[in-house]
Image 1 (tube, rainbow, N blue to C red):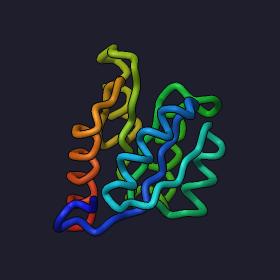
Image 2 (cartoon, rainbow, N blue to C red):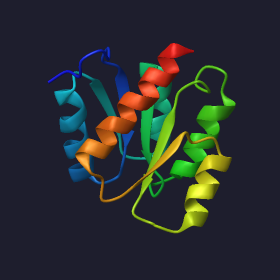
Image 3 (cartoon, one colour):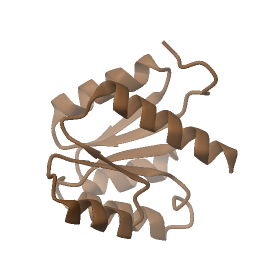
Length: 132
């Protein structure tokens, strides 16, 4: 069911675990979003270039380049620097969260991901970006 007041967007979800991609895509598609997926850093960068997503949800522990590096590259590129990047990880070390912010992430989502939390953060970041 589409969320009231929020126009659906295109969201790139990057994770090397297909089960995670499936669950996250199902939650986001239920809100009316178009979901594009990638399983590694190189395909994530290619998908961002091809699909021009409104938001990226990016696991930090993916095959090369890492999620941190993908985020950093997206933020360095004038064509993608405006896209909010939500990093996700099962690693609960605050140093990872700090490093994520340093490379340009907009938010950090701990795994296991809760559907209501993810959907609320997606809504918040899309609304914020669209107000600019």
